[in-house]
Image (tube, rainbow, N blue to C red; front, side, top):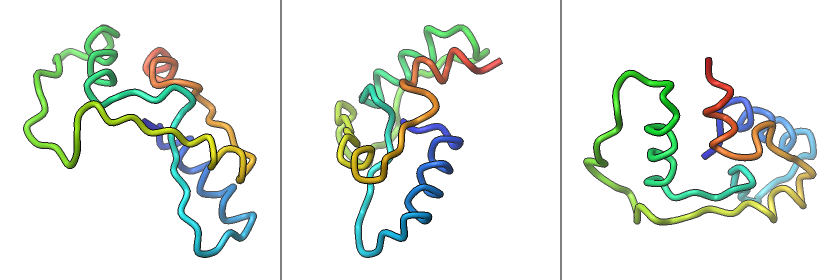
Length: 91
C-alpha cells in the first residue's frame, strides 16, 4: 500500500534522478497483504461501512510487496512508514 502523497514523492524522486529503462516498486516499510490492509481499515473505526470481501482479484490476496531496492537506489523513504500509520492519520 502506498498513499497518494508517498506515490507522488517517489515519482518526483525518480524523475529528478533521471532513471531510464528501470522499473521501481513503491510500497511502505511494512508489507501487508490486501486482506491485512482491509482488516486494519475495519479495525480503525474511521469508516462508517465495513469491508466485507473481495469480489475479484488480480493475484493472490496474501501477496506482499517489498521495495527495499527502490528505497536504496532512489534514496527515498515514505512519509507513512506503514499502512496502519496512514490510517491513523485520517481525520
